[in-house]
Each structure stands twice: as C-alpha cells, then as structure tokens.
Image (cartoon, one colour):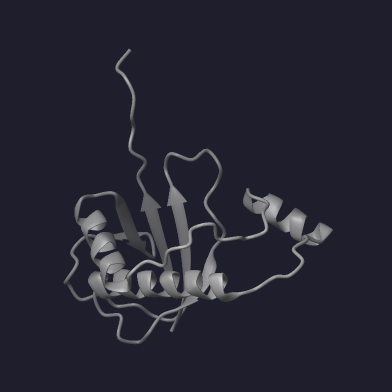
Length: 139
C-alpha cells in the first residue's frame, strides 16, 4: 500500500521535507509494525545508497535548484562506513517513541499506543515529528 510520509523536526526553522510516497507492506497493523517497517525501509535505502558507485559526481543546474528548494544541496554521499544492525535500529526507534522523542500522526490524528490496531489505507498521510532536545545553560 502506498502512503505519503512527511518528517518534521520542531527545532528546525526550515519547513518540513516534502511528502514522499512510500510503499508499506499490507501487514502494517499496529504503530509498532509501522515503526519497524519505516526503519527497515530507511536501513535498506542507506545500504542501497552505499552500494551505488559514482565515478564522477556532479550536479546539473536542475538538481541544484530542486535540492535548494528542499533546503540542502549535496552529492548524497554517505560518510558513515558502518551499517546499522536492523533489529537494534528498530528497538532504538521504538524506545525513542516510548520516550517521547517523536510523535506519529496518521491523517492529522496522533497515534499513541504501540500495540493498538492501526488501520492504514491507500493514500493516507503519515507525519513523523521529531522533538529537538534543548541544551545549554540557564543564563
């Protein structure tokens, strides 16, 4: 099933990233499964990106313009040599949700419970909002 996913960080001044069409398995029936499927897709995308070999990296003017509109212009290189272990990444993402580091909304309604039934339909809009931790002194 295809859904639209938006990720936003409240601590950033730039607007949310554009909606991206994402294909989820039909077995996504709870928030825990949704988080697991999203992490799996992201880890797979990272591995695919690392496996792409570019001999000559350059950007066309159209690419510069479209990336600039999104807020960042770059070659898309992955500098981190390590690949996350999938099960550990899923557990970390679930723990982060339990700790309140991000919220998940489905069609503008917040989803709280990890194991309650979740009904997703074709074309639903998912929004992940990350909260930024504040650091520093009081004065």
